[in-house]
Length: 327
Image 1 (spheres, rainbow, N blue to C red):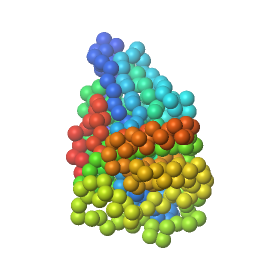
Image 2: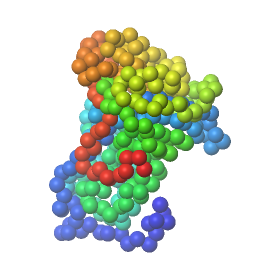
Image 3: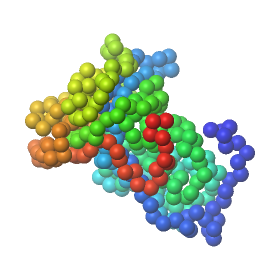
Image 4: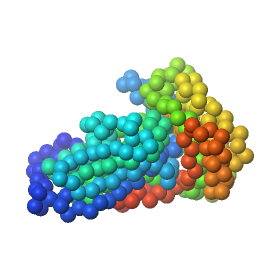
């Protein structure tokens, strides 16, 4: 990225002719990422794990807003906002600064506010999705002339999940999770997400997994000719895995309790942990079944975070890049 930007003259956004002075408030949605399966191999010499995963995105997530301001600012609110810092290590800040640098912009006059609704360290890619939303929103709101391909390059420097979150479309991720390819056509899926209210740090889960790596490694499953409905997807997923599930449950037994509760529910067609946990998901036949399951589980376990929603096309709000979904 340094080479692509070399020699570009910064654009100063002055108080009398700034992008900020022409801005109106705009918002972007940062959807939860769900790993329908996650096959993980042994770590390579550099410590990274090869993987193969099918990712879909939910109409459940965080919200990022941008508004004119006298100076650059970033604040966090929402149910889980108090658990995060708004300093330079926050992925939203890093994404904002990276795309401004790519466009050669200095002295921006706008404020970002993140409404954090997804649990922290939950296996839903919340931080990555927040960063992706920041890239899309800042680019769109300020009219930055940053090519979508460069946006994806910037995303890759922020984390292996961030490029997928920029697209927020069903993808198969391989390599370190940063190599994305077209998924077979998939139906929208009704889902319940449930988290026990306990974090599941990714690094600790991977270290525990390394003590008993799956023999199949990061293998790609055999895909059926057609996945027309939820039952087809469930039959397919039955022959896949989340290789991190046992390690995560060993470190955080509450994940096992959530998974058991979902699996025992009559509305559940299929249940599994997402990512490195602690959130688990249940696929249901329809929206009515998903809502019934979420309402009952929320009443039975008031300390858990439980939401019903849909996996599939997600309205991202401002800043869609117009990318080819299968590029």
